[in-house]
Length: 350
Image 1 (spheres, rainbow, N blue to C red):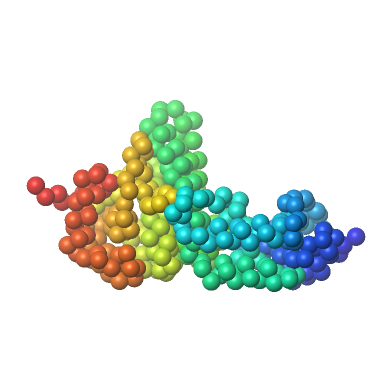
Image 2: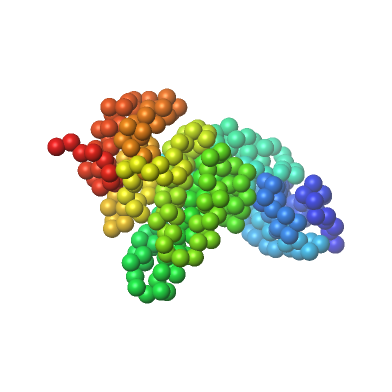
């Protein structure tokens, strides 16, 4: 019978025993407890890695703690890291599944117990090129957020109380996914959605309305759905602009409604496709937008055209694709967004 104590530092002997029994030459521990999110009741994820090992999974209980043990082939794990680090969006349209992303994040943040060099090398590869993995995770959570927002849009006008309850549930799902996208934009990549509260508490930038996020998550009437979707939009677009380019989200200037005339189209949300960024509007309307347009659209949160232009020009020097943003260019983009009905409240030229 293996002995294992609760503190993470005391799991190494147990993991080494599991690796030897499986014929694995490398092993790592991962999950919420390793990244400072779990507690003594959280399960432990152990990965055993070796040449030509067949992928498998089983559960053990050690001193009352559930241990999820997975075996992976060294060749497969190396291939996974290569696929994750490929340019994103991928020019060839290749995709990495959400399950693959979870393993990549766990390797990135793993406590390596035993190794012949493979795990350390792959972990260093991920750490040396953080943006592709971050972008994939932001995009994954954004797709989940949009699917939920689309459900809210479909339910919101129903007279059926059960449909309104469904809209509230979908809204909460959208807000959770948006919070995870925001955390990923801040570099906090852990995939478990139940830890979103702790991740935002430790990683969200100064100025992010965490109290408002919590209030909206617990709101149980349909009246708050407009505010909820607005915060979903803001969180996602901040992640897909500043977070996408590894710019601290503390630079984002408009977390709450500024009271001005400009408004983003309700229930619209940006998503990353395989090749470009889209703004998707319920009703199957899809708009392909360059990075500067997405930034300007995101800033239209109860602001004025002049304030959006000033904010965009201030952010422009931080990211190369935005370097050409000037006040004049910003006003031209605002007109294009208004013509496409992606914003309201802009002054149109005759």
